[in-house]
Length: 272
Ligand code: SF4
Ligand code: SF4
Image 1 (spheres, helix red, strand yellow):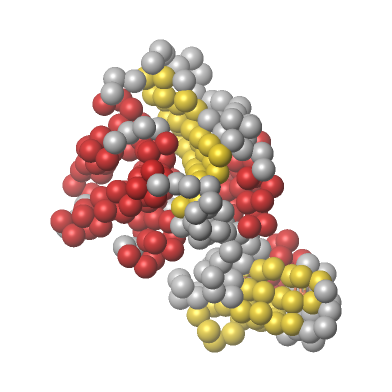
Image 2 (cartoon, helix red, strand yellow):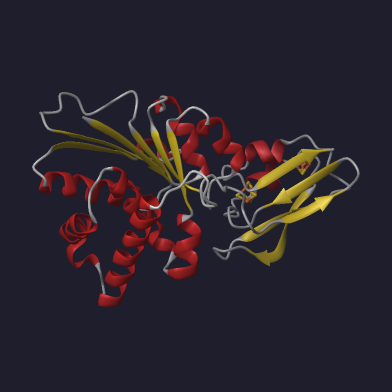
């Protein structure tokens, strides 16, 4: 019996990955169970998928610990942390999840595999298919070969591919994720390299306030919660066309509220 937990945000394709993996397992005549969980997501949480694959009938679809966890975003970490054991294989998007979120998890799991899915999707394919890259990595850990997952993808998504070009892009992304996992090396640069590449820093002699536009969705919580109104939206826009916040470092009292409030880990405050 293998228990798999996937966690990401709505729109990241978590449930699609779950359906394809379930399909691939069924094609091998294995028993499967799959429960999607959207309830938490509606309250600002994450989209979860619980999957089990076994040779025998699966008595109960829920589980308390996971053999494999796939985390798509910072917000997923809180949702998955109670499912971790020292035998868990932890796959995560190393270009979307900050080191602050990863460090406590990495020391607890059996193996951690950082796949820079968001970065690769953005640079080579489309951000909409970062899930296919993580699907490839998961498929490899489950010992599916590329053809098995491609076939399950076709069965699951069928005519949802609007053009041949879109289909090719999805399958190429899947193959790339599988290869990255196959070539996984704990010393390689993509393992645990959760540091966002693009950032904007404001410093004075007491603190440094950093914003990571790759993670900011422009929700405005930091602007709203800052007790001294030191944060405002500026004209610069983020990757989603969203407004980006900036700090007036002179006004900032280094309370850390913005860092704690940001649901996406897009702000870091360091006191000197
Ligand atoms: S650390 Fe506190 S005072 Fe400074 S910008 Fe963030 S919320 Fe505002
Ligand atoms: S930094 Fe975080 S809290 Fe502030 S607008 Fe961006 S996503 Fe929202």
